[in-house]
Image (tube, rainbow, N blue to C red; front, side, top):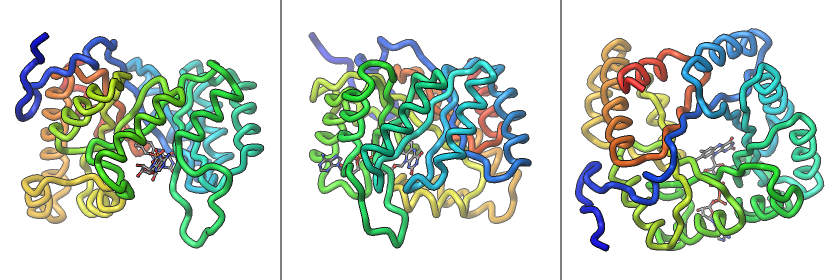
Length: 294
Ligand code: FAD
C-alpha cells in the first residue's frame, strides 16, 4: 500500500495515530503550600470545563513529593475527575513501589504515568530499578491490567541516549513491557515528532503517542529547562523571544501564536490529542485551547 507522503511540517499523515480518538489531558505539579493547593483547585475546576480525559500530577525526583503527589491526585479523583499520578522508580525499592501502587488502587486510581525519573544530585543509590521498562514490567506483574500505563517518549531523543537507534529500541521495551500509551517530552519542532512516530511505526510500535505541549510564557525559565531536558528551542523562536527582553506581553502573544499553530498542525496530521504542561496556571493553556477552537 502506498504510504502517505512525508515532507516538512505535517504533510505526513500519521496512520498509526489517526486511529485513536483524540484525547486531551492536563499536567500539574503538587503544590508546596496550602495556598498553592487552594489555587490549584480553582485551576483544576476551570480546566475541567474543557472535559479532559484526565489530570496528571508529577512526582518529584527520588520520591521527594510522594505525599504531595498522592494528596493532589486523591483530591482530583475525590472531586470526580480522572487523575493519573506520575511515578518514577529511580532510587526506589520494589517494596516501596508496591506500597504506592496499593495506595492508589485503594483510592480507585486506574491510570499511571510510569517513569524512570532522574537521580537527585548528591544521591548515589539508584535503587532496585534501572529503567522505566523495569517499572512498567513490575506494575504489570503486581497489578495485572488494573492500571492504564502511560510512558514518556522523546521525539528529540533522551539526553542520555547512547544513539537514536538505542533510544527507539528502549522506547519499544517500555511498550513491550505493557505500556498502553505514551506522552512526549515537549518540543517545538513538529517534524521531530512526525519522524519519531514514523520510526516507531517501522518498529511496529503503534500505540498512541500524545504530544506534550509546553506553553511559552517566560524565556529565561524555558531556556534553562529546555537545556536540561533536551528539548530544542529553534533559533527563529529563540531569537524572537530574546528580542522581546522583559516585554512579557509580546512574549505571551508570540508564544500563544506559535504554540497554537503547532498544535493545530499536529492535530491535522493525526496526533491522538494533546497533553498540556500547565505549570499549575490556566491562562496560557486556555489561550491555546481557544485558538484551536476545540
Ligand atoms: P527511560 O525510559 O528509562 O529512559 C532513560 C534513558 O535510559 C534513555 O536514554 C533511554 O534510552 C535509556 N534506557 C531506557 N531503557 C534502557 C534499557 N533497558 N537499557 C539501556 N538503556 C535504557 N521526571 C520526574 O522526576 N517526575 C515526573 O513526574 C516526570 N514526568 C514526566 C512526564 C513526561 C510526559 C516526560 C516526557 C518526562 C517526565 N519526567 C519526569 C522526566 C523523566 O523522568 C526523565 O526524562 C528521565 O530522565 C527519564 O525517564 P524515562 O521514564 O523516560 O526513562
